[in-house]
Length: 207
Image (cartoon, rainbow, N blue to C red):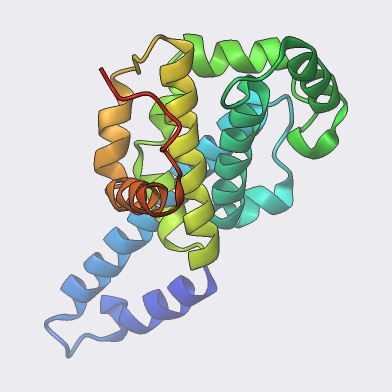
């Protein structure tokens, strides 16, 4: 805001009557400021949606500079979903203990498990959020090590959904793949590691 005020004063046509290009420069500055304000509003809305779905409330500090908080909360949401549904074959007693521990933890804004599962799996708003520019922008601006973690979580969430719905996923996932084409590289890396280190000698031949 401070930088905009300084530039708008410097570029205002009234202060530059001898510069014929001053009105165009001032107009471009105003358009850029409007785009930034729109982007901030979209990031704040996405942040409030994610935090609210987990039963929390975005703080004023988070809303003041929402980009970093948005990436953190998007990662937290994916981590929550993967943690609740479990991965692989999880015995029922172990899953029940995990859900109890999850409900007591403040790490996920004391989210209610069933409410969160309904919001994620039965409705599309949360999943579609991961196809949007605000989340992609927040990802692009995050440190590389956190981006790798995010891609891993996103892939695990897709696998968890396929497991839950008999190898089917919702139509938003292809859009997510377009938004994050790095997922293809991540899966290629995972498959290469699997082929190199996984011992399949005792497994039955695929049918």
